[in-house]
Image 1: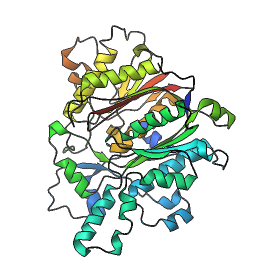
Image 2: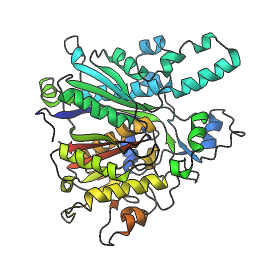
Image 3: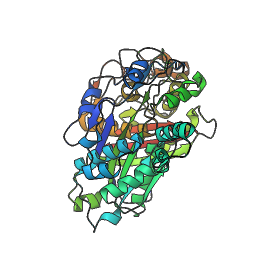
Image 4: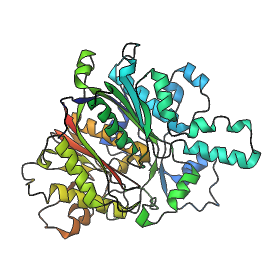
Length: 440
């Protein structure tokens, strides 16, 4: 258990996904997720609409989960957009999710409180699109004015810097990069700052814009053992016997984490509580998860929360839809929740993966799934994943007894009282993060 009497509450959430947005005035994303709606689109149809010729690129991935009709002017101040006309999409996505979050929280930044509030960002590739376009421009034109904004767009801390400036937050501002676990790591590190008394509140953002043909081709070239993109029509099928890889998604999420007493003093309304967390390394393989260490991280997060495995009602799994990844995660879940010597007879443990609906948003995934977890607890609702049955090898890893199965929710949603939940994120580099959330 943690050595601190401070509590950390969530006072605002925001999301920008292929299913729509989430903020103070709309829950488009969550309402679609509850209905099991998919944000996927055939990849060549998407590229054709963007006038991108991929005929000679031999991209085999079938599906993509892009943002639709994104207009920054709907969410961000006109003066900011006038001064920053060529921002990378990763930055714009992150600032949009942050603006939605701050609006929901109702927190006003003043000269008096600005140094107590910091920014933490998680991203996997940052301004990867700007790097690609900058390199193409250099190859065509050499040094030119077209490269003027490239450095400021590519640098990993760009979103954090812009967010601090945009909102006037003068506390710590930095970026964490841990591949697909980046924004989950950002959450845990932001929590550390609050528990240490180095911040009273942290705006945490996860953002990714990785749908360019070059980035898609890089992932598309990876084999099954490394987590390739799905080549089947319809895309990602987490924990399905027919899964063959993930769907590349894009978007951003954000949460405002606040020390509980400071939130009360400032009139903020908490919607959930971060109870515990753990970040650790599998220390085994760059792209294949280690189920033993993933299980260790989950146990540590639950212990940090002062709970037992019996207390957890719901898990938003990493669940990418890759054959090896899903198998490793369910083996880890089995070790924690079925081999622990405890009984699940008192209640069921429900498991799903939001990537089934919005694809794998890489560095933004951890925080988007944390947002989903908060909403699941609030509403007592576990969203479905699709019209398929889970793989028997996932619900009973390694051929365990027929009577003991992991309750992976696929076809139908579940309505149940959910008190405590766990959100998992695993990244290339064998980096794991598990976060325990409690309903208020």
